[in-house]
Length: 369
Image (tube, rainbow, N blue to C red; front, top):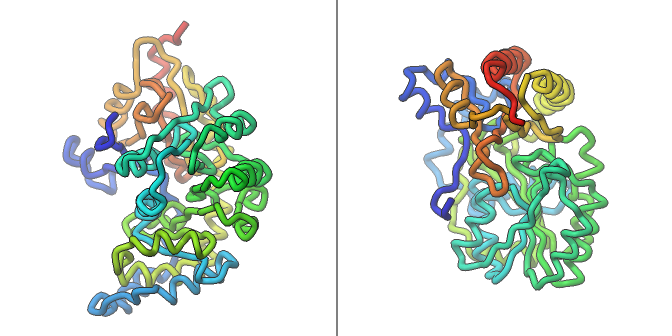
């Protein structure tokens, strides 16, 4: 895969075109979006404030950053907003002007693309399948000592769903600080974790001037089309990103809806209740599927591996798309082959349907020796 071929899930329109479905008929397991219905009153709130689009947004996004300040516990000057977390990843790659970066892999492809497009050398630290793709922290810290100016971590990691503890992350960031190394930490999926307090690094941010934390509304609040992300860091570190950010990268409706979403406590509670109950149920269902290896996770998605002989994920993908179900082919991730795929976690009825379809399809094939 070259730099221009970063693959993402969620291409519902393609499946609709190719198979004649309407979007409502497609079960999209390829994109990790919260399936809990959008908060009550959201459409009315947007309609009532539609005239906002006739004015430029506030260049400094005071209302949005103040709301995020209340949500995260950090002063607004520690917070920067962007057109999704993706914009902030690419801004960091431009702003820090790095020569050499270390990234555990498999992980989110845009990390590598963001830095390589800036002429930075990216080294991948392999996550081993036999260890369940969990990061070996001790060996990673040793590898960090080989002249890297930055490291990038995703916690929970995408696509593996593996989670590092706050203690483990702190150990990495502390060592990186001693070496003068920046740590970019993607916590896009952290709000789906069972015990957030044991993994989230927000409470430690003030200790580390070398730490940049990425967050987004996309996954947890189920609004990928809104394109709203934010990052937190020491103001001196953030200043480098702000100096390069184009004006008004967050549109008026997104900047208005962000604060409103953060106040939807019932929706947040429902989401927490859903993931806490549905993740173990879905994992258990998938583990009953013949010829399928399922990796435990702490995110809103599951990494799976086909154990069937002479069959790969592209064939499975095509078979499922024919009945209106999309999955994420994970073979584009480094160190994953044509046997790996990723599934979002959805509602109970959909999860039962998918598990049943997988069981029926894979039972027809022989297991690999």
